[in-house]
Length: 307
Image 1 (spheres, rainbow, N blue to C red):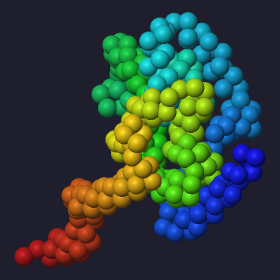
Image 2 (cartoon, rainbow, N blue to C red):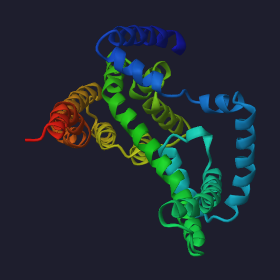
Image 3 (tube, one colour):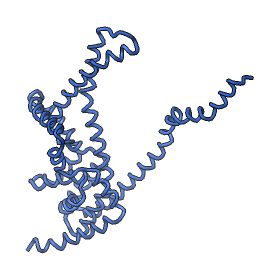
Image 4 (cartoon, one colour):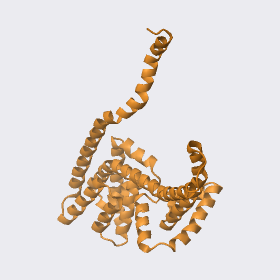
């Protein structure tokens, strides 16, 4: 009987979400869905990759087991937290990422030892003996830091995707709540229909709630895990509304308007910074070409016929 009574409510929520989807949020939510991977897509891509990719992943898996024995639990937890913030790119585990760093360190050292003396000979002549250990140390440093730099870029990209999708997702959750669903059911309904990084994190949070964790603790942990200021503020307001017994739909509507205002302010700020960022390309690339085209013929004429 409970399932029969809940079915019209879910049908109404789905119809309202579909109507809202045809509005202004349609393109943005679809764009964020197209640029993100569905949960479990990483594993499928790993299984369907080329032979070289599968062999590389097998090597990383075996090397990660050995690397895990050399790391402390604190180091593994720190790496795992960063990978989680980046969405576990390519399905990498903490121990596997550590092995990739050591592998990159060895590979970069070898490349720098081969290329460093050659570069020195091109500019300064025969390379002395101290160039080889210096090249090896520089290669080890760059190789060890390169995976961290790559992971930081992935984290920033994922945080930007979450920030861009946040306002639209809140609108859709608001529509579902106003249709009669509870907050948890509305979140699950929206995340199932619009896959993106934010949906993955919300789905994970709701799964933790279903496993027995309190909703307030799960939402707070989600804010710390993603580390996006707008999302943290939104989740904090949800927790406070739940504690104080405020209407969730009103809180969602206010937060959505606030986030859209902040997004507009951020866009205006970036537009005001654009002229300053264009100065250096204009001075170093465009103006020299213009001077050559405009003043070049005059300079040739003056050289041929001096005063």
